[in-house]
Image 1 (cartoon, rainbow, N blue to C red):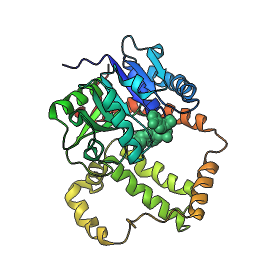
Image 2: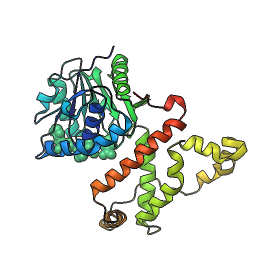
Image 3: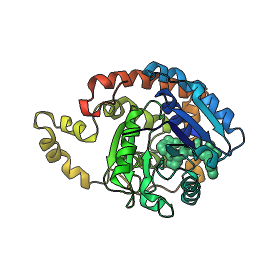
Image 4: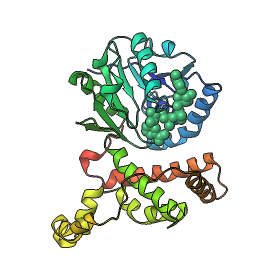
Length: 318
Ligand SMILES: NC(=O)c1ccc[n+]([C@@H]2O[C@H](COP(=O)([O-])OP(=O)(O)OC[C@H]3O[C@@H](n4cnc5c(N)ncnc54)[C@H](O)[C@@H]3O)[C@@H](O)[C@H]2O)c1
């Protein structure tokens, strides 16, 4: 039986704030910690800006922005929490040390989830006193709109605690993907990274600008990927013969050098091209305006995919 009364967030950057909004929207009390100067003000601003979108998606009974407390110290945030989500920067030594602090000060049966994009859970739980309650729970930005969370157990995580973590994320109206084999980058980031590497190669080699690469994605494959993933998309691309025909026709192309696989060197020149390209594409919009614009789009898309996704992929509406 899931009895989470108090959730704690450690690290209130992009992802930590996203979790806060999702948890508040689903009716939890949240306590957050971040030692950075101005962190509380940034967190409260992020909650204000995101709230209209979670309202549009539907709030759980009793959900309120007022049920959020901020403290400077991790120890203070986690001591009474039943569920703790860690979201500090993707630096393994930092994560190890913050997780050890959380583990030491949290109740022994509190579950700890880490938002790490690529580090394996067995590595992160190695030096914990209670490694059995640790999972990786990798979300997607913006966490308060996108429903997917990849849950990965480490070698020392018990299946009972995986079940508890899964139940908690489901109570946040999320779609849980249990990753059965731990691997760097889990599942989704391996896919995203492949597209990212190729995008950087194309810009680096002067084949296209950042704007052209983005268009190549959003006006074609990107639109269909919100409904079907790479497999069903290619099944359909095979026409009447489906995947059988598709593999026959395009199978040999897999051996052609369409992709570069290794990431390009991030030289100063490539850095400048990518940064100035994105700034040009922003068309004078501030980051906050771009963020709101993306959110409006995703809220509409969310409603659409609820109608078209196969049933088991649909997050439960509360
Ligand atoms: N940005 C994304 O799209 C994304 C998506 C999924 C997962 N993640 C993962 O989420 C984690 C956080 O990424 P982010 O993009 O939010 O980073 P971020 O830089 O926006 O935020 C990190 C926050 O952690 C705080 N912090 C640093 N040291 C701390 C400490 N000792 N104790 C408490 N807080 C501390 C920082 O002050 C900052 O506010 C990373 O592991 C990342 O891989 C990121």
